[in-house]
Length: 274
Image (cartoon, rainbow, N blue to C red; front, side, top):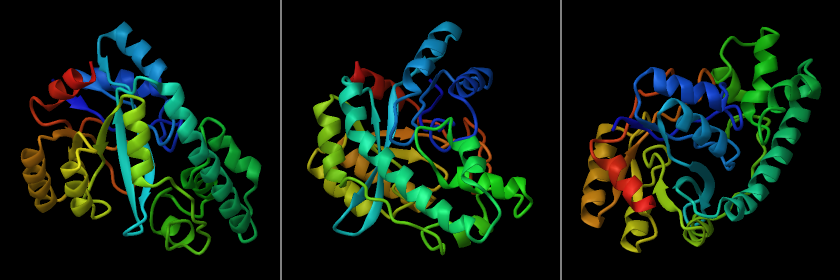
């Protein structure tokens, strides 16, 4: 099966609707896909329903934002096949609220320097389950201050090193893994290469707290992929793959389906989730 298991719609910080992504997945020849919006499962049922109609397998999923408070690093955890989505969403709602509050603070500071309004921003964020930097930057692009929503201009303003950045409070990686276990989901560490999480991956795998790891991803270097494969083989982890698709709300262009699961791995995931 050709499967891309990491995609974001406009329900979080992507450009396209859930329906567009599912239809596009079918059009480019994927057999299987997942909508993994940040901290919301709002797109899971629409994606699954449309997938059933057009003949593409849709795996229910979500990307959970967490922090490893020992290293102070971000950790993104993918959860697939949660059995109790309502309980999981209840846990995630706190993050959505914290994010919304932080982004509104950032927007207020930005509006003191640039002639955009909250109404301009909400024109884009209203479709999402929370507010993101992309929604704040899109009006800046509309007004001609930049022609790239997520680029150098964004980095100077709203990235973690930007002058208007406001820190968001996230659950610990262990809290997230506990809730994934409680709801009967499968825990897969997302893109270990992005946040230098190889050490944490091995620690979690040794404790049997994760069942998989994202292997094919644009931010995993070849060296990181070698390390991931070694750990996966040692501890019996499933190796997934995904493009981390956001449309043009991305640092670099990667069309949906650019990164897929290694051969035979999605079948293991489906078997474990059934």
